[in-house]
Length: 118
Image 1 (cartoon, rainbow, N blue to C red):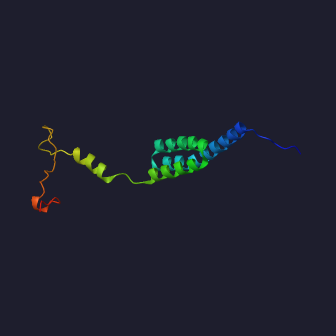
Image 2 (spheres, rainbow, N blue to C red):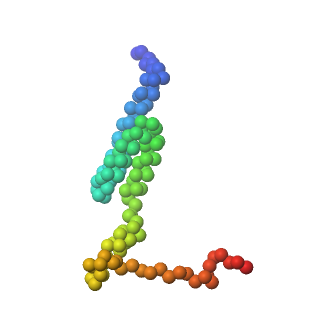
Image 3 (cartoon, one colour):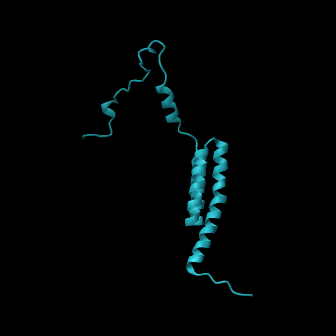
């Protein structure tokens, strides 16, 4: 049986191909999860990033997949959702004027200030 010898560039090429295959396999996890959760675009970005990361290093691909899974599974910001819905509410009386319901912020009491001049 003959020995197989690889030069430096051939070894790099084979390692890169193996990393790309690992990146594809790992990238399918957030892609499927993103499709199921209604975040298809994020899943596609995860797959592409995982392939590129796998070409660089297989460990990098694993880290990328973990980050994208976290991004897909995290709940949306309730503040941004409530602010968007609040800004679209109109009074029935002011519907024609374009005036929205908004709260007036009162200035805080100057005695309870963190900056004490003593």
